[in-house]
Amino acid sequence: FASLAMALNTIKAKGTKMSYSTLDDLKKKIDDGVLIKLTDTSNTGVINTLMVDRAIRDADAIINSLVSRVYKTPLNPVPNAIIAVSATLAICYLHRFRSVDSPVWNEAQKGALAFLNSLAKGEATLEGVVAEPAGSDNSTAEFTSADRKFSRDLLKGM
Image (tube, rainbow, N blue to C red; front, side):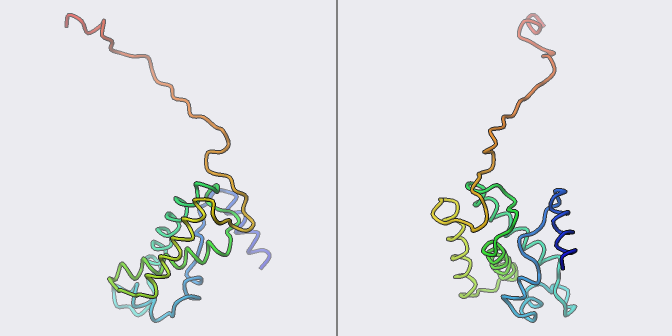
C-alpha cells in the first residue's frame, strides 16, 4: 500500500487531476445493484464506470466552485468529509440522470450542499487543510498585444 500511496502522490504532484471520490467510495454508500440500475443504459448488467466518473467530476466541480472561496483547489490532501460529499453528490446526480426521485438522496444532497456553503462562508472548516483562497498568492495578470494597425488618424479620409 505504501508504494501505491507514493504513486498517487507522484501523480498528484505532476498536476494530474485526481477525483475526490471513487467508484469504491460510492459503493460504500449504495448497493452495486442500485448503481447498475442508475448507470447501465445499455442493459449490460454492469456498472457504467464512464457515467460514474462523469457524476464524480460534476460533484467535484461543485465542490471546487464553493470551497475555492476559502481553500486552494483542488484540495490536497483530500479530507474525508470532502470524499463523502463528492460520493454523495455523485450518487444524487446519477439519480437525477435516470429521473429517479429519492427522498433520501434528495435530503443527502441538501445536507452536502449546506455543508459546502458553510465552508464557503467560513462557518465550517476542513481538518488538515489550510484556508488559502484561490488567488491569495497576490499574483497579477498582465496582458500585452501587438501595436495597433488602425487608428482614428489612419482611417480619416478613407
